[in-house]
Structures are given as structure tokens and as C-alpha cells.
Length: 105
View (cartoon, one colour):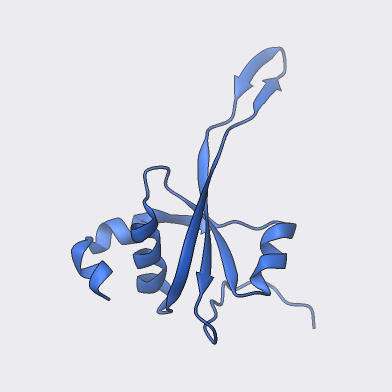
């Protein structure tokens, strides 16, 4: 918990935006890896500290990906979606995060 002592708790709460739900994130979740949408200015140590603080688990590693926003048309106007960042968080063995997803009976 030495990482959390150097970073303010307000910053840790705001680093993680939401879990990223996709087919790939469901596949990597079976291996103890979770995918989160994070702030674009978040660093790997901040992401690790935020996950450990919010979910009370031990993080083994963090990998980040900067996703470039797509060019889209909105009617007759050209637009662009925002750039965003996602983090692949691998937990220590035996650790798990319950994200509250609906499970089939």
C-alpha cells in the first residue's frame, strides 16, 4: 500500500472511469485480467494504486493502450470521437474482482 500513500485518495477515485465490456475483455477476464477505461493522463502506478485501493486486491501488472478516436459522420457533418485510454490489469493468482455483471442462471 505504499503506492496509495503517495497519491491522494481523490485522485485514485477519479483515475478509473468504468470497466470496459467487450468480447476480448470477457476472454481475458478468465485469465485474471480486467480491462478498465481510465483517464488519458493516468500513469501505470496510479492505475495500479487505484485498483488496489478501490477493489482491495493485489495487482501484478498493468498494460495501457491509447485508443485513437474514430472519424464519424453525424448527418451531413463530419465529426470525431474523443481519444481515450484503456488499461489491462492483471491480478495476482487467487485474486478476483466482482464487477457486478449479470450472470445466467
